[in-house]
Length: 353
Ligand SMILES: Cc1ncc(COP(=O)(O)O)c(C=O)c1O
Image 1 (spheres, rainbow, N blue to C red):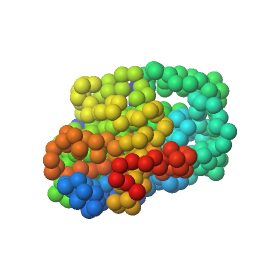
Image 2 (tube, helix red, strand yellow):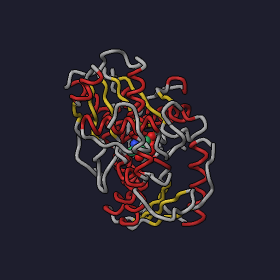
Image 3 (cartoon, protein in one colour):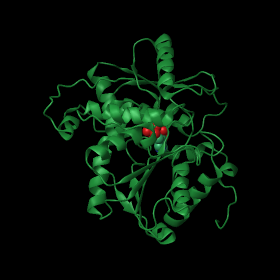
Image 4 (tube, rainbow, N blue to C red):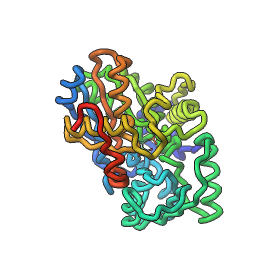
């Protein structure tokens, strides 16, 4: 979907000037920390860092706060009071949208294309506390591209609620993606200051917007960081092409044509998804316990545990070089930890308590 960025931007501006000229409502403190993980580094025999985007914003925080700073600024500028978005049952994006909208005195409607659960848990409980309106429409899985899904849900929301500000799943558009262009500049600067300018930067890909924003941002600032997205859901038809096209769209909105192709998208698509999107995976559970027991850091079973399983798995296969530093983008999601039975998270696995 083409999402025009409505600002007077001139041809002679640099991409940083253009980025700075686009309206944004700060919803958190920046930069977020880039922390070293000494015990994990010793275990893997290479420097490992974590970028702490997990605490970004209100209501337990996460990566979507960066996107919402641009999206809600646009909503406010256009005079909207009603914000609509959608996601999976444990969508952190939905929760963070409700929290940020409350802060701005806006009302939120959240669509879930699943049956209403008999018991609300995790993110859904927090949505209730935040007073968000939740709509459950049991349509099941789709197998469509993310663009088609967004178009259909937008139609449904217009039919049901009339005029509103519609935010795609995961804040997946060029305006939301700017949040991760800013993050790319922030991470590149921190990595250079820490002497790890050529690190691998590993993250979860759900809607893919975080990865698109980082691809655009790192390319535009000439960063040497090497990106790796771990698909946590295998949700979308033609996912790499969608990510490439959003990264290119973000570039052109900033006056800098980019030409990523689907083949150039640094994404591992199915290896770390586990049984299905939204369910814990055995590799993810092991990854969760590894990080918790070595570093006291928590991950969530839906997104970050699967991405961290990707980091551990690709390290073990030797796909990330031998001693090149690693940065794990911790994108949040912790409420989902409380949405699952203990047994589904604590399966017994080799060598772990
Ligand atoms: C905790 C967490 N991490 C990562 C992601 C993936 O971000 P994106 O949708 O931008 O790919 C999401 C949302 O989808 C999330 O909630």
